[in-house]
Image (cartoon, rainbow, N blue to C red):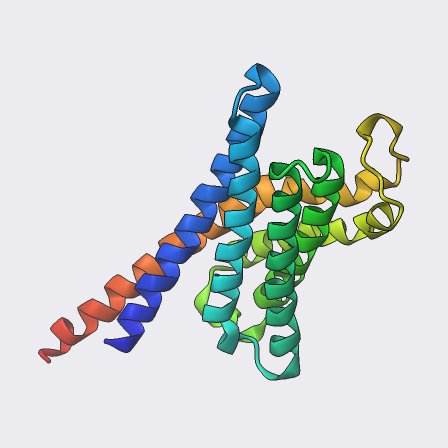
Length: 208
């Protein structure tokens, strides 16, 4: 019963991440097309994606053995905190969207580092399909590029038009956040749902 609940709860959390991240991407595209409140909705969605990701990292913390697991989960939780700060900065009007985006990029880099370690872990190889793990590794690697935005934060860059070219390396991480990561999360949700159904079916098959 505990295994069933674990798979079910993990699947729901992963699905929430996938839907929230994908919805944020849609809101951002809509904002650039028609303006309106969609930019703020995107910022809130980004923060929610970060917080939910910290929850998933904590739930799966035992899947990464040893000290590496502690470091990876810590990076995800710290990253979620930075993603929340980034969204708060722009929603409150404290900074412009560009500087806030740099802060969030670094935050999601921490989540990406956790995702990368998780999907390379041997314990996940037993549970997840190889292609799902490959997608998770690709998503994590893309998100981890956000660490390149650190110098932009130190320099206080908040003007997209005047930003140096190297800053965009860090912003490439959003391809992982908005595309590869939600795809991985939704796929993970379907795998966890299948495992949950298998766990329920086993007692019936044995007559228990």
